[in-house]
Each structure stands twice: as structure tokens, then as C-alpha cells.
Length: 126
Ligand SMILES: [Cu+2]
Image (cartoon, rainbow, N blue to C red; front, side):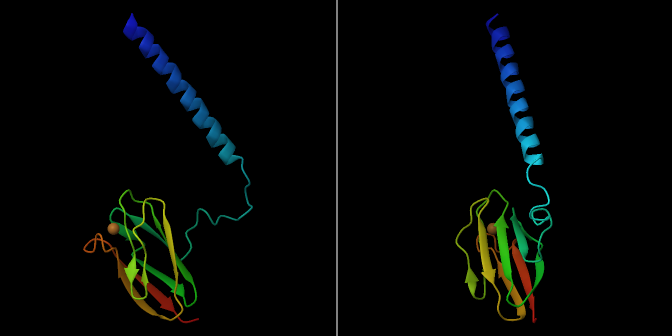
């Protein structure tokens, strides 16, 4: 008797949550479309994602003067260290940016996971 009532309440709560979630989804889908192009979905050349435990892509190519944006989408704390740049420890969701003025090949790593997480930024002139 007791257990039955509890189960019913739980089921109702689940349904409410589902409905709320769906509503949020629909609101999100009907938001401004075509406003900023599809910048959000298409990764720019200078976008690098930090995962547990890799940089994705491991090799990114940009032009001199461009900025690389690293975003931690893992659950662990990661960082980015290379010649001329060293981020703080980045929690999940945190972003770090660095602009590369000179052409060259810049190897970098996460000092917290140096054997697993290595990356390369290739900066082309012009
Ligand atoms: Cu790491």
C-alpha cells in the first residue's frame, strides 16, 4: 500500500520532468535560426576540444594572426601548455584562447596527462 503510493508519485514526477524537458527542447528549436549562421555547429579551424584524454583534433592548422580556442568538454581538469602559452587548469566547460602571430609548428600538451594528451598547432604564414 505504502510502496504503491510511492511508486505512483515517482512516475508522475518523471512524467512532469519529461514534459518540461520536451518543452525546453521545443523552445530551443524555435529560437532564432539563421541569425549567426551555423557557426555553433561547424567547428572553426582554430577550435580544439579537450576530451578525457585527448585533443580533438590533435593537429589543427590556422593562419598567422588567428586564434585557437580550446574548450574542455571532458570531465577531468585539463590544461594547455606550449611555447609561449600556458593555460590555467581548466574545469569542464572552460575555454582558453591563444593567438599565434608567427608561422610555425607549435607542439603542446596537457601537463596533467602529458603522455596521453599531446597536440600540434600548425600556423601558416598569411
Ligand atoms: Cu589533461
